[in-house]
Image (cartoon, rainbow, N blue to C red; front, side, top):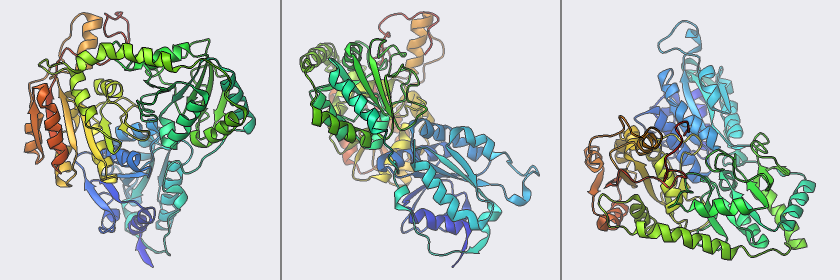
Length: 566
C-alpha cells in the first residue's frame, strides 16, 4: 500500500490504540491522515499545555500520551511539559515538525537544533530521515517510553520526509508497549529474601509508597504486605492513593509540605522517625517528602526498591538495594513473609490512632470554620466530602499540593490524585485535567488551582469548552502569590509585589464559553461544586479564600532563618 510517511505515523498511532492527539495541527502530514472516527484531535492554545494534556491522558490510562508541535518556538514551548513528564516517569511521545532536510543549515525560518534543545528533557530524541523509517521509529518511541522508568520521547518529523510516499504493509501495534510499565524486572531472589528477613526482624518497620508504586499498579500488594507485617504505611505525595485513609495502618503523606501543625503529614513523619526499618518503594527520595533528607534518620535501616538503579540508594545509606518493579518484587517478598511468618512486634495501631486524633483535634475546628474570607481547610473539607473512588483530583503545585495531599481523604486504593511533583511548577492542573478527562470520561474530574497558577492556563478554558470536556475547576482565590508572599514575610519580615487585582475567575470562564460562579460564603461551597459536577460542561468555581492562610508546611508557623531556601 502506498502511504506518505505522515500517513504511516498516523496508522501506527492507531495501531497502538491512540485515541487523542494534543497539539496545533503540525506535523501537518500526520494530522491530515489521522482517522477522525478513531482519533480525537485536541487543538490547544499553547504547546506547553499539549504536553501537559498528554501527561494527564497518560496518567489516567497508563497509555502513552501524544503531543505535537511545529518547529522552533513551538518545540521549545513543549519543554516545560516534557520535563515534568520526565521527572514524574510518565510516558509521553512528542511529534515535532522539523525543518525539511533540504533546507537544513540554511537559516530557514525559526531554524534551531531540535535534538540539542529537547534532549535534556526526554529519554530519547529520534528523527525520521527517510519515509521507510517512519513505522520503526514510532514503534521504538513506544518501546522506549513505556519500559524501564517510563518517560517522554521526542520524534523529529522533517516536513519534506513526511510528504514522501513509500510502499508499506499492514501496520500492527505491539500490545506489550501500549501501556506502562511494559516490562517488569525483579531483583535477585537472594536480595528479596534478605529484605524479608530484615523486615520480619524489625520491631518498628514502616512501608513508604512512592509514585512508582502507583505507576506499577502495586497498591494491593503494598497494603497486603503492610497487613502481614503489621507495619504503618506512609506515602510520598505522588504515592498518595496507594492506600485509603480509613485503613488502620495508613499514616498519610510524608514530608515538609504536609507536616505542619494543621497537616496530616505530622502522623507519617512521626512514624517514620520512630522506625527501625523502612522499606522505600518506587520513590526518588526527594527533598520535600523526606524532610530535607532528615527522615528516615541515621538509626533507621533502609531497604530501597525502585525500577531505576540510579535512584536506589541515592540519598540514604541503604542496607538492601532492590532494583526492580514494585508490584512483581512485592509479590515475591510477600510470599516469603507469609511462608515464614512476620515475627512478633508491638501493634502500631494505637500509636497511629493517637497521633491521628491529635492532628484532628487541631485540624477539625479550622476545617469547620465559617469565617469569611473562607479558610482553605473548610474548602478542602467540603470538596473531600463530595469525592468517591470514581473521582479524580488534579491539583496544581505550591500551596494547592500541600493542602490537597493533607486535607483530601483518599477513599480507596488506586490512582486518585494527579499533581506536578516532578518539578513542582505552577500552571499545570487545567491542561492535565483536560487530558485526564478525555482519557477516562467515566471519572468525575475536579481541578484545583491557586489564582496565581490559574493565570498560566486560563486560555485553555476555551479549549475545554470547545472540545466539550465536563470538569470542575476550583480556583483558590486569595488574590496573591501565597507561597511567595508568606515566604518573604517569614524570611524578610515583609513582602513586595505578590498581590493581584480582585478578579472573579468564574466571569473569565463565562467569557471563554464555560459556566461558573463565585463563592464567598463557606455555606455555599457544597452546592456550588455539586452544580459544577452536574453541569456536563467545564465549570469554574471561584472561591475567595483567606490571603493569610498558609499550607501545612513545616516551619511556616514560625519565622524562618534569613538564609533559608525554598
